[in-house]
Length: 423
Image (tube, rainbow, N blue to C red; front, side):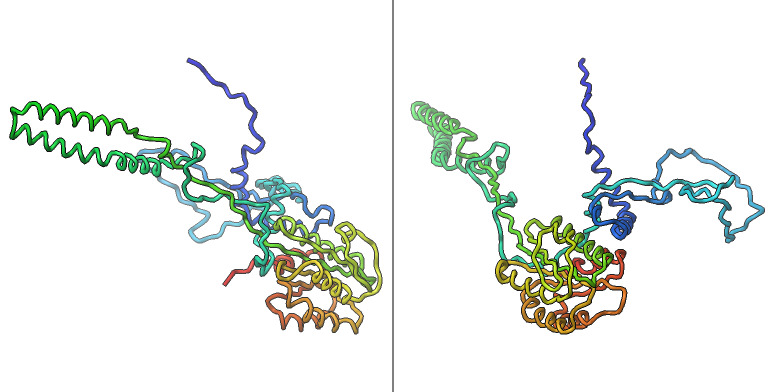
C-alpha cells in the first residue's frame, strides 16, 4: 500500500469563491461604506481599497446541530414578574464593544466585524450599475478582441474536439453505401439457398456453390472497417472579432480666479471619478482634457489635475475648442461623443448666451450626452439659466446638477451616469 502526501502550499486565492459569496451577501453594507469613503477621501487616494465595518449582529450564521431525540415531557415553570405582551427593557450600561463609552460593570456585546476590500473590489462597488448613456455602435473597431464561437463541423481537427455522434453517423452511412449491393445480393443468395434446400435437396452442386457465394459476400461485408479516418468529424471553433464602440469624453474644467481652491478640489474629485470610471469600464475610449479661464487649452492628464494656472472667465472658449477638436479629430459618423463640464457658474455676462448658442447649434446635435456640474453653495448664476434652455431642447442628452460640497460628488455622479433601462 502506498500513501500520497500533498505538501504543496495553499494558493493565495484559495478562498476566492468564499470571499465573493461574502461580498454578495453584505453588498448593501459595503456599498454604503464605499459611498462614505468617496466623500471623505482626498484626490490622491481616490482609487485605493477601503476598510469596511459590519455590525456583529448582522453576521450571525445559522447553526445545525443534533436534537435530543426521542419523546420528552417537560414542565416549564411560570414567570411571576412578566406576563404575555409586556416589553422587557434594555439592560442598562454599555458593552457594545465599539469603544468610546464609559466603563461599566454590566452589559455584554460583540465587536463589529472589520475587513479590507481591495482596490479592484472598491472600484467595482463604486461604479456598479453605471454606464455612458446612449452609447451606440457607430464604428466597429474589430482587431484586438475576439471570442471563440462554434462554426459547424470539420473533417480535420483536434482529437479533443471530436464529434462522436456525427462521426458514428458518417461511419454508418459509409458502411451502408459501400456494402449496399453486397447485402442485396446476400439476401437474394440466402433466399435461393433456402429454396434449393427445400425444393432440390439432392442438388448438392448448386447448394455448395450458393453457400460459397454467401460466404464470399459475408466476408466482403465484414472487411469494411467499422470506423475509418474518413468518418472522423470534429467541432469547428473559430475566433470571431468582438466589435467595440469608439467613444470620446471631453472634460471641461473652469480654473478661473473665481474658482477657490476648495471649489477646484471638488471639480478635480468629480473629474477623477469620471476618469477612473471611463478607463475601468471601456477599452476603446479617448479622454480629452480642456482647462479654461479667459482662454481654453487642451492639456494632458497631469496638467489638467495639478496645474496652478488661473485667470478671468470666458466659458465659451472651452466650448469653441471642444467643437474644433470634434470637427478635426472625431467624425460624428464614427465616434460616440460625450462632454462633462464643471464650473462655479461665474461667467462674463455677455458670454453666457454665446455658450448657450454654441451648445445648441454646434455641440448638442452631434453628441450622445453632455453634463454640466455647477459647484456653488449660493444661488445659480446666469450660465445655469442659459443652460436650462439647452436642457429643455435636449432633455434626453443634456443634464445639469449642482454640487455644494465633496459629499455631493458621488450621489450626483451616480445620478448623471445611472444605467438607463432600454424601452
